Length: 125
Image (tube, rainbow, N blue to C red):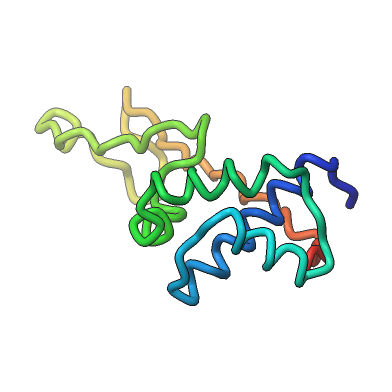
């Protein structure tokens, strides 16, 4: 898998920032540059400054704790079950599993399984 130069630079800065954060070291442009250089990478000069400012503007603890808790974009909201209706309860399926007169057979909807995007390590570090 190949990525563009800008994607490479962004990923380098994010990984370097997370590494510094994990070691409880203040995230600055100079420290980002040191980590990126130590990993054998190089990025455009403006990326470390930009990401240092960004990391200072967000609460990384809170951000990392909420990873995966928000629904994916484009996902439909979960539907809540409607309250049981006495008339619907009166129409029950017969012993063979066929719906009673006038009743509709419920269809089970199967949600598609998420695709595996893991193409292996990116080799950035």
